[in-house]
Length: 289
Length: 206
Image (cartoon, rainbow over all chains, first blue to last red; front, side, top):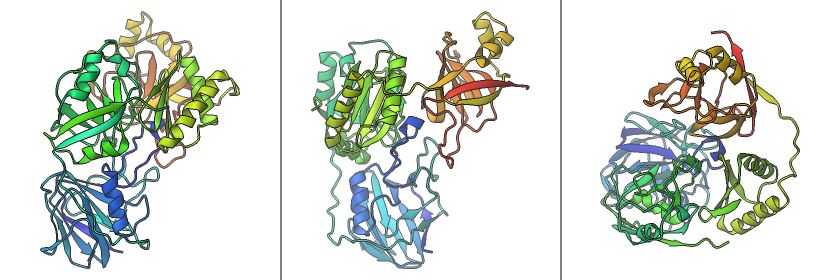
């Protein structure tokens, strides 16, 4: 069966798919590819249906040697340079890899995460119907290391998109739209204004659990402790420091700090590509029900 | 009772008390809103997360109707009791007994001589927060959290008893150990301590 040998694993390369939603009441996070648009585009370029595994590559460089094949692969997400045995290949477009050839995914110039998709998907033993790695909870496959073999599913390709996808530079400034609440009333008017008016900066300590931000402390109207309540992907949680963070795919399922608002899914996913120092602004609206 | 917005696909229901929250959670477990992906209970809140934003208004209306109907459409039958064997040999057993001005024997008796209800899960897969009808005590966390609470530990914090499927650092006070399999990701259901489950701790010799 076709597989890839990991020659260089990069700082963190994870097997991810569409995630494992539906188990939050047992403390299990949704996980899955963070930049879902890049994951889905990659799947289309290699003819995969929804839900198959890919590699989510943080920064890089990553080198993968093909054993078996030929297989169709595509790299999407961050604007990384790709080559096959030293010859450049376009990102955002499928290309064939045959036995013995090595795909290299370089450090991207901007952005953070590249998605390596292959026809048939990356195979791993599923946990709760998903092959997604959740290293925070020790669930799913371990982060890849040099020498690992990642096997490729043998499912047939579906419809393959032959339209090249424009891989863009990651922006240095993001506007994230979202909905106020559930605990916006725990903050003063000044605190809520500050959330929208501050040019927040992405902090180095960010990971798949959450994007930490740097900026002022949001003023609280209610100073007591919140009884732990469910939290969700995209939630803007405000811990004791008053400086917000935005939960990512591996977020905890409950939390004891107030959530001032929740970022819309497609905007929250853009944080997957936001390096430290990127400016984040929030544009919040009231809920519409 | 309040309905609070929680993003494009979810609503957080804040209940007046734990009993009301239990009834809403049970009612929604049996009569879920269309499109429900996650139904997550916590102490006095329940989150309903649906597949797509267009399903949210109907989910909100569904919750409002259930509440208006009094949340009494659930059978109040007795649930099966899950027995969890415990060796009451925890490192903090005597400290907790002292804190409650009772002997360790009394503490063990009070802890094992009643039914506990798994109120909600979280913190780690398979960890259940259990409350007891005859357990009025609020136990403070240790001043210095332990770097490792071993798997199988039965521990106390606030008004809850918790059981650790995996090792974790933490400030909960350890009173005992169980050999029960609390979490098996290949099993269905994977957790022994499911939200809503009724638990009794059975004393076994150390």
